[in-house]
Length: 244
Image 1 (cartoon, one colour):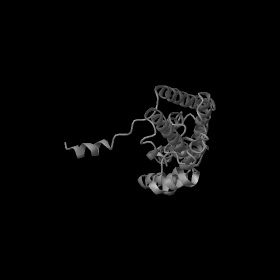
Image 2 (image 1 turned 45 degrees about the horizontal axis):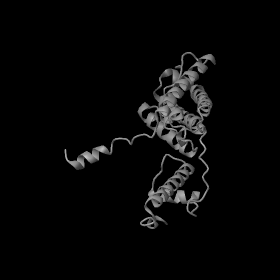
Image 3 (image 1 turned 120 degrees about the horizontal axis):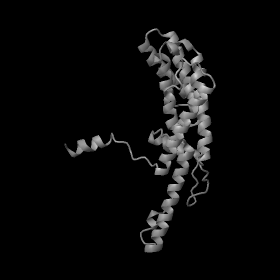
Image 4 (image 1 turned 90 degrees about the horizontal axis):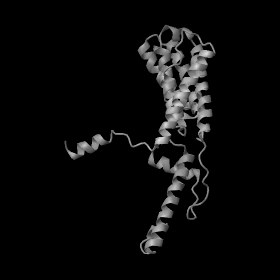
């Protein structure tokens, strides 16, 4: 295998996740609690026994809420609004399009469109929409009731557990970006600068602009501290070139 081929294949490997062992344990416990409590609550509320105890897309929602709670895709409105609008798209597609294959495609596409318009993009919503089409006679029999139970009810219960759990372990949920308004070397970074930089890179990172702004500030502060440390050890020679 040539080096170019090996380098190309390595691009398919995901980057190493910056998650500590403690965070992995917290995510594990959170997902366990989230799904268990949601399912038990649905059972106690007397949800139609013909329905599954909890629909499969909630597992994907739990991954986001408890493993990456700072992601825009995991915020409460993303979970509840995204799943709810996706369920609506799925039911509409099922009732309006007789062919299940075409209905499935329209359901997922419609879910993406509605979520983007509603500013609540949530990847598990695609599975919620698809379930409305391929879920079988019981799901089909619910009609628009599927949007409320089990989708919205399950989503709201999962978010409630996420709020209690994440804040209980001192995570910011709903996520609020840290405030870092102090200037770095006299340079004040504003939101418009971050948005301009993202537009120039043509990148839509899964990171709020506020978080990205805070990250940039921290990188600049860390670099300044590193340069200052090098200057103390080695003197000013060669360091001034690094100053803006």
